[in-house]
Length: 231
Image (cartoon, rainbow, N blue to C red):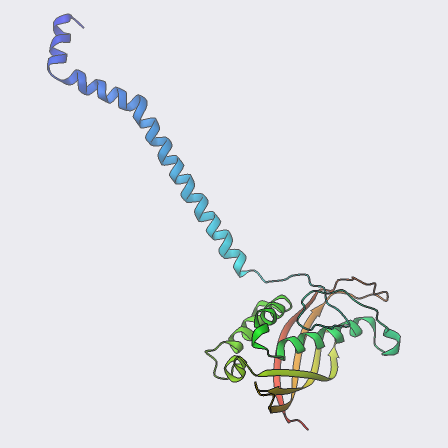
């Protein structure tokens, strides 16, 4: 380009426009592209993380628990197997263990102590399917007029005593129990007999049951029936 043409090019203002365009294309545009790519990647990561969290909430809750066969604290969700004498009961090892775990489950589920509600909910959640725990949660909700929380509130206590366990199969049993309740003044106001029909899953149990053995025990269905007044 001649000097005359260059001067006209500068005086027309096109030179500066073209210079700005060249600078923008060379330096600014790549930066904008990098920023756009960064935010796009960030949004994608957040979306994938949210999807994984939501999917994980839909999965069944299955946790391996350790139960005590001779249980001193029925609100414990983890314990070790103590000394057991199966031969004196006439039960198979499987039913001997299932019998103890079913008693423990019903006792924890049906007892009521306002100060131990957190432990009670934790125990039932850890040893039940998601649907069984949901029904228990709805039953205990204050939105349910028959909820034990509404009936016994802060000061009354409810205690259950297992009276019989009958196996219908290796995964179904009927547990009968008596419930007694006392108010804050230690006055009795409930004495009832109940029957719980329970379906459950449990891992294999061998003849040898060493201390510290683990059992996969999960209640898959729980139906309660009132039998009548206690003696």
